[in-house]
Image (tube, rainbow, N blue to C red):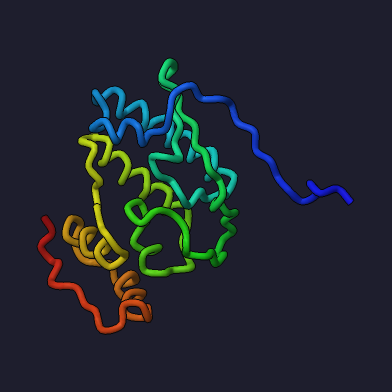
Length: 179
């Protein structure tokens, strides 16, 4: 019996550079043009992925490789990626909390590729000045910070919050006036 049967290997082009995390660690993008190029490249890559009904589910700076000499970008680490059929229930333990959409933080099993777009928005904010857009230390802290900036949870999200056993007895302060 072949010991490699059932294993999948992914071979990707070598990227002479580093990850987007290196840019974040040095204080963010040096110009708006560089930020726009990164946004264009990563959104083009996600459009390709999403057109094939795949969700990455772990978009973060360290999973975006950049080629310093070409200004090219590649998405990597597809370990949490899943096919997304209409109405499919997906496992929620995925991603890095600072880049997770509220529905993931709330434990929803019904979500779509918008969770990848949320993560890109968080990364773009972080690339402006090198600081996380929503720097929560836990799921509940992350949800609080998101609401402090964007306003209260939607009714669907609030229902998820109320039904989640991890948040029993907790409630958020009035978030009707975001920063």
